[in-house]
Image 1 (cartoon, helix red, strand yellow):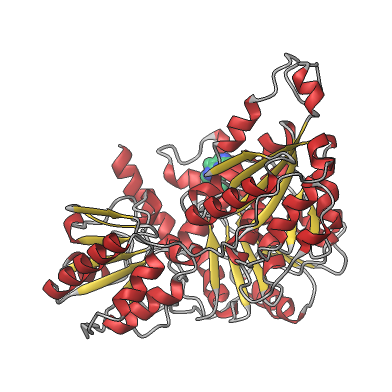
Image 2 (cartoon, rainbow, N blue to C red):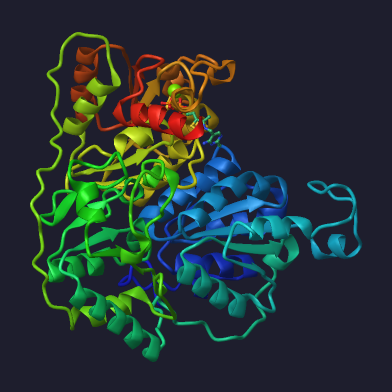
Length: 565
Ligand SMILES: Cc1ncc(C[n+]2csc(CCOP(=O)(O)OP(=O)(O)O)c2C)c(N)n1
Ligand SMILES: [Mg+2]
């Protein structure tokens, strides 16, 4: 069957499937998914068994369902899709925040849930994991709300429904919910619907495709100063390379917003700088905001943290959005246009603009290492020199995500952050998922210690599966980003329990991990040298000041306070 994710690798694990649960898992594995993330439970046993019996799948047992959902999200960001499996009610509800985040940020996660047996449901029995009221359907709707498509699978509908669910999930690049009862999961498939050969290609309406292309070509012909904004959605929809070709063919500048960091490398010749309202690099706001036409490629998020707290000053009538399935400006909305096809068509028609103003990029100036107490500025300075082309970077919400958005990275490095959903605790399990999805890369996590506390038991899972990340845990004595965003700089509720973070790998049984607790610039420099040489996991606790905000957070500290007061 067609393999959506890997393209060339043709799997056919469906032929080994004996049960409906095995069939469901096999359909997903045949897309190219190689790992599943799960916490077992009795109603999910048919699914759990299917996960461990598929010859092409490695099943990971996570510390809890929320962690599993974050790990699946991280995995799918790299791999294109992921499998998450939880049990009825108690398991699936714990995973909901993570799955909702995947929905917000266009990540394909197939959430499999095993439910009580059909006879118990029909007889309204009092069963564990329910409210004891004989009602069973209410959790389906809750879990389904975190997805773009949901199905109650039975042996009689399994083939048809799996066709539908896979199609819809890839169409919207959002999660899917697949529920099956314990007894149906163990029965053989009786549905005889032929399997879909769908491989992720969407077909536009010819007339609307032409209309969209004409609109774009007309707008392009009227504009001399055109600037592109490539969105993270290009990565999600597998369209980054096509979009880059369009930028290169037009020969126009592109700017990058925080959520879209590293979609196209900052080392590209047409890169004009970082754009985020008042936080933008020198000259970049002017470049974007005085352009004749702004090509929003993929659909950027005009969100608070993407726009420097809405401090951008953009005339929306200049923005032409080429979203994954439609084209829009204030005067037009053209649906049923798929971006891959649209760009292909445009590439045959556009002529170069040859408009590439050379801006002097804001240079990142490393500071010399001394024996002084560690500051965030010194950490970022060393971090920029440390990240190499072989790394993949995961950044947690908090001071880290705000400050890191502007840092330069080597060309091949991908950068993952939950800029829109922003659920703290995401990054630690997401690093596990990212590391499993990209074993050829070294996963690097930067997390605040407050966020880390929510999900740090996933370190044990990293140790169990011999993942070798480099974890930077920024210990600044609490929820610093909140201190900076609040009017009262020191509310009681931003103080948190003090843990011995550097001891966590040992507590969680991680063999051969190297750990450090550093509080000076030179200690950090030494740790970084050793971290690079070490083939196993590395954990570096960084001690920095309670009010050492870093430059971007300093900006939000004054700008947002001004907005709120
Ligand atoms: C699940 C969730 N709960 C609460 C919040 C609110 N929140 C946002 S950032 C933050 C603190 C992060 O602190 P830390 O990880 O220590 O990072 P720091 O800013 O101190 O470097 C909190 C509580 C959130 N975003 N997500
Ligand atoms: Mg903190």
